[in-house]
Image 1 (cartoon, helix red, strand yellow):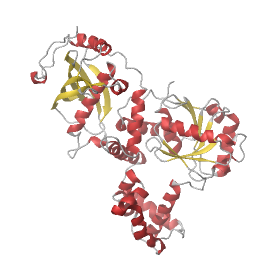
Image 2: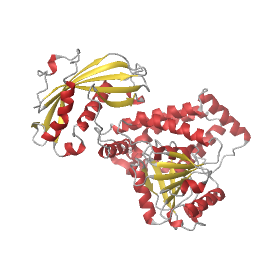
Image 3: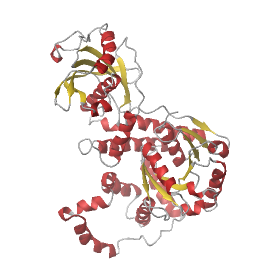
Image 4: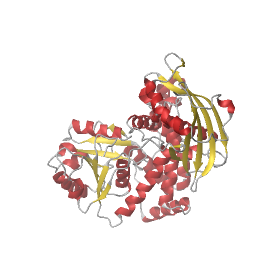
Length: 503
């Protein structure tokens, strides 16, 4: 099976929260995954995680994902890893257990297989100490949910080969993740070091009754949590320094580091009373929502944030949004040529869902998102006739010069959307299209769009006839759609020509 990554077969040992996320990430990149997890509910748990992941991807991107990889549950670890190119170990965080499992993986895996450990704090040198082939072992520490959050900390041990690190980084990049190489191994690496500091201080604030867990979470999510989503810590503080930048910030706030503000050097006693206190407050905060419901809410929010970041900097993207935009470009560039559709009816070109980022204050899809879906439909038509990224980069494209939209019904969060395209007329420079958008099941028509497309020589900056290769792919669709009734809603103002005139 073709995959996005420079590998086609992976094995996941452990299918819990993190292991299940890895499984979903690999499968949705078109990679076949074999799983070994002796837990009696492993298949149910992995299935639920995968369902949430597929739902999240449907909201996250309209780019043409590859067919999902094959998922196989194995009866033994050896069966799972025997032909794997990447093996991801995600068993509980105990050094003795991880060493034993990694030893079994090392003995059964192909000689050139990559072996990543999902440990959040154990040193890779300690993990590889008893392996026969320690050079291929590295830490691949992800963040939950693995299928949406792109970061993976890559940490090599003393025996890890540099080529292993480079191969791992390349694979992660290919599946839309951000592999960051940590220069020196250290317990808990970078991300968890920062989180541990915040977590330790948070526990003291709860223990000392400064606030409850919901108040503490509100302080994070309504303030610096939003800043961190795009710029992280140091760049945020650079801006806080004003025009003088980071140096001014350090001069102004640096002395505070010596003030007795923190209890970071003092570890809170997590006794039964504090555990129950935090547990009860957390239960109240959840307000009856199940873990799966909370996961779906989290995923929807993350999708909205990433899509907002993708639209930043005039569409160039920022942070995780730029990573998504780059990933989508690779998806589009290597997508299989579109199959010849059924020409006896309007072309069914786009299927997607209403994303959380598309919802307005009325609770349904906002106006400009209708135009986005219709634009995606036009793009799908253009790819069908050979006007793809390579064609555009070569200096030619079709520009939309006129659009008329009718809003007929409301599309609501999470609803499936399906868009169709009918070519009303075309000549060597123009394509006149009529789109219909359907939502929900059973499908109801929620909008139509009529557009005039003009072929342009982008280097010359003027309209120009499309080349014969494009017209040859366009002609059969035009001829077939000439036998369809012209949509009664189509307005004469969008174009004067009613009959296709491609010879």
